[in-house]
Image 1 (cartoon, rainbow, N blue to C red):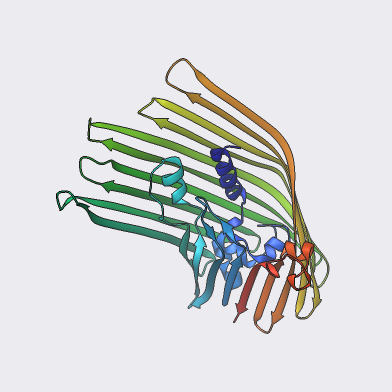
Image 2 (tube, rainbow, N blue to C red; image 1 turned 120 degrees about the vertical axis):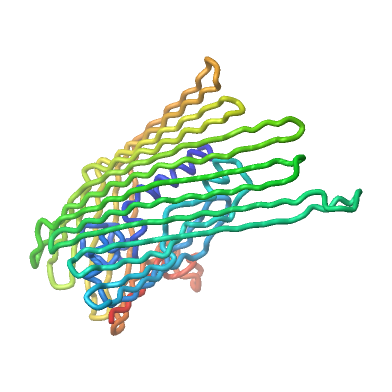
Length: 420
């Protein structure tokens, strides 16, 4: 698998995870039944559900995440709070994911030297209005500027000044409306970045830019809510498109300027139904099925120097996707959870390269495969505090290290919620 294919697959998996940016330990331990049961993570999908989770503070610690360019981030925290504001509700989320990795577009695709810009995390605000409407605003900004002189030891003088500038931004507007049985959410975002360096005529002048626009629409309707059974239908639609461009200017020995451009887009739609069977108080068996989940991704690269064009098209059709989870109160202070997700997917990739002559290279790859993931979790309640955990799989398979096991810890994901 080449570098581009592996990167795109990772990007697509992130994009396909419909509730990824709302993940908390409870939903992970139950098999990811996003949208089909009520949970405080709903706010990022359906902003007006903030009324159902007023007066709370929640912190999330996620498992280690690995990024491009051999960068690692050992731990990833988010913290949010919902607070009353007269008849309204105010929510603030810190260090919340945006899903935009600037380095991938400015470094990997464009071949530039710029790295270090980071708008992958945002600050997010929500305002719940008295009539069950809510508005949201998120933003992330990063910039850097470097200026230095180069010393010529022969002539004993500074021969040129070097300047490098980088900047990136992310802005999001969202809105939601909720009733007793229905929730709707819409989010629009715009992300962009730019980088350039400027040197003497004997050196390369380089510029790079990136922009992306995205839209997300989520909705659900509770078909049934009774003491022993809840049923809900939910659907998600996501779209994003963007472009990148790098210009290389060689003033010396000849004046020449080359431009490398890239355009990309992806699309996701899924819909399904879920049932929450309640055999007793504080006991839930949750089953969901999405008969169809469809996603596409397309990239097109062009190089003005060689008149070379490459096109990639990817598609995923999940037919179908199931989740099954159990949540049961073991004691007043302890709840156990187990959940799994099973997916069957048709995957197809097509590739075409045009060198500008009559020769055109083509490639096609298709496969059908299934995937399965399962997690166990425990929730501990201490007064107004609730601690939700997803147990480490290495702990379950290898045992704790004090008896010769290999686990790195008890849990891979932890949520702490305080209700006041």
